[in-house]
Amino acid sequence: MTPIHRRPGFVAAAVIIFLSAASLARVASSSRNELVAANAHRHGGEIPLAIEHYRRAIRWQYPMNPHSAKAVGALQSIGRELERSGDREGALLAWRSLSGALAATRVLYLGEHPAREDANAEIARLLAMDRNAELDRGLSDEQLAADHLRLLAVDGSPNPWWATLLIVGMGIWTGALFVLARRGFDPEGRFQWASAKAPFWGALVGLVSFCLGLLFA
Image 1 (cartoon, one colour):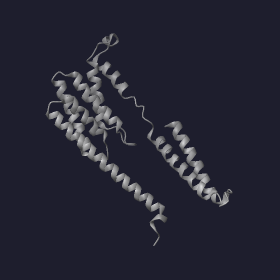
Image 2 (tube, helix red, strand yellow):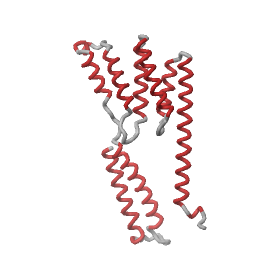
Image 3 (cartoon, rainbow, N blue to C red):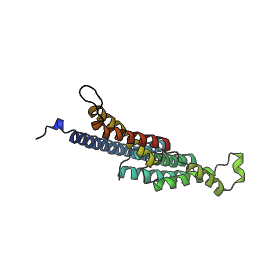
Image 4 (cartoon, rainbow, N blue to C red):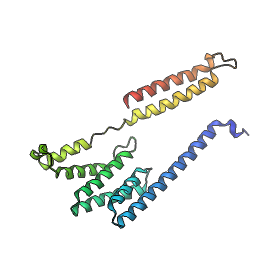
């Protein structure tokens, strides 16, 4: 039987699985704790604190997170309740917190959460009611809301595909350089092209991928 210290692939896989499981447990626990705190503040009438904790519960994201979904629903409910009570600033805070939290936790390749589009629409509508600026006075509510919504829709996030190429390229590049350093030289330190050829081309491909991702992400 091969000793475990001579099976680096197995050890690396085990470490990755352990770290992934630990990270998932940490995220799930933190999301749940934030949701519990948010509910407590909401029932105690401390709405600004509740909004803050709901926002944090959403940002602690993982696949099929039930705590995040409950926090999204709670912020939507708070936003509508505060507007009905006449607290427009509080409603804006709730909708902005929802939009910002969802923007910070967007999953690669899957686009925006539908609730963020609704939150942005509510933000634009509420902002359109405020006509303090002289330039806004000649616009209808619909025109002003559309202008705000257009600004809210601007996305400065990196392109997920190029960002993935950047990360993968960096991993291949550094890994291939490590293999090259281990296998590309004989015990006397002389370069050996026969054994260095594969990691050399791997490092070159990784470097090109990293540079392309860095350029276009």
